[in-house]
Image (cartoon, rainbow, N blue to C red):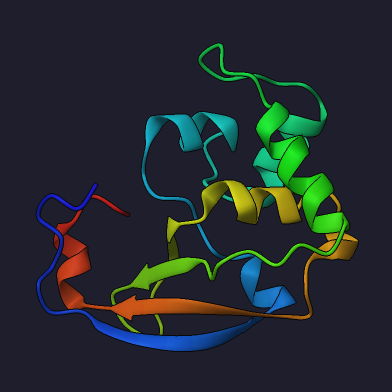
Length: 129
């Protein structure tokens, strides 16, 4: 995953509001592309999971398990996002399944979620987008 990862990335701890999370995209990877019906958005992937759509023959039980744990109050490590700059699209680098599980029952999406986000113009050269 980190092959050709930019050497110069500026990292921040940030708070994403609930509405901002809806625009965070998956990395450009076949599994996440298919699961989200080509949108790369967790809201669409969670809908497919709830409707029992399986991609590449992979079982979705893990998403249901994570969702159940979230409902029981478990706090997970911070998600890791990346972007080229503060105004570009934000992409999940680590935490795809957790972010998806939040959308399986939206009332459990925190009003504010603390994450790590890295910025680098070099992400334009990386196959994220």
